Amino acid sequence: MKPTLLIQGNFEQASQLLHQLLVTDLPLDCVVMPNTTDDTPRYQPLVVASALCPRLTIRVGTAADYGQATWLVVLDRYVAETPVITMVAELRLLMKQIVENGFKGQLIFSGEQDELLTYFAWKFSGLAASQIWGLGTYPLTRLLTYRLAERLGVGATMIQATVVGAAKSPIVAWSRTYVGPAPILMYLANADADFDADDLGKMSTWLEREAAEQQATLRYMAIIRLIRATLSQQPLIAPVANIHEETPAFAAASPVLVGVKGIQHLTNLVLSEDEQQAYAAQIAAIREQITTIENQQTEGK
Image (tube, rainbow, N blue to C red; front, top):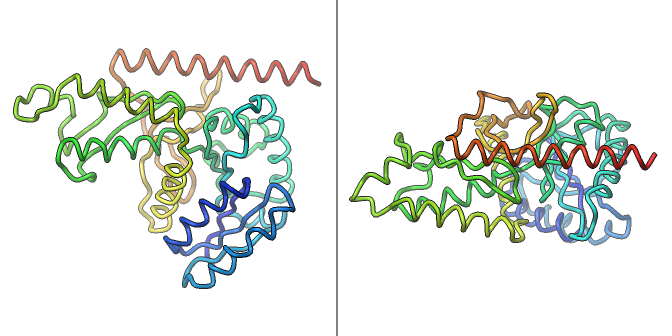
């Protein structure tokens, strides 16, 4: 029996992901959960096209499919003007629906606010923290990896980049970025490398600029990469948004093992002093957002 991938989102976003899945033809039962019933007939051409895939199938699902899901991907279903408190209120309704229908799979968020949605999904659903995660900075990490490989003239498999924090404001951990077995900072002392501290600064600025742009396609590629790795029983270490169950708890992107059982924390994140200060400031901002939203929810009762 093939694993089941549920996709929850607006037609425009869900159809983009489905087009990429049709090309990859992974051994999946892809089930679309439309946000509105009016979207249901719009998926029919994609359902028909999946008949040409030897391994992948596409169909429109019902609430009963939540209980059979291996993964449920929640796409960015909000417009820019939507207040975060509204996103969280809609999320509460979705969590109630999937839990009532027996959801036991992995819940994956793909959007600009995935650290907040990951946290509140955990609070609302009662699911284990290992089952809930967002793409976090993983799409940007892959982008930086290929940019570094091109800049240094090596294969992308030789680069181990680390980007942490939040998808909208990524922090490049140069102290934890490697080229083969060597830290990239060693290249700064190599006169033959034609690579210096200015290049690192420029790349950080470039990545921040890319993070501010529309990243849907990068996110869909990242989803497929992570699912492909799990299907091939080769789990990846990736900086996805995950729950940090300290006091007070929060969600942010840090390297964890992503596999068939969800995410698994491996070790504490060790950064340089400057990187740690930037990361701590970002975590403080995320915690402040969480507190503000929780207070607004209390006031609204």
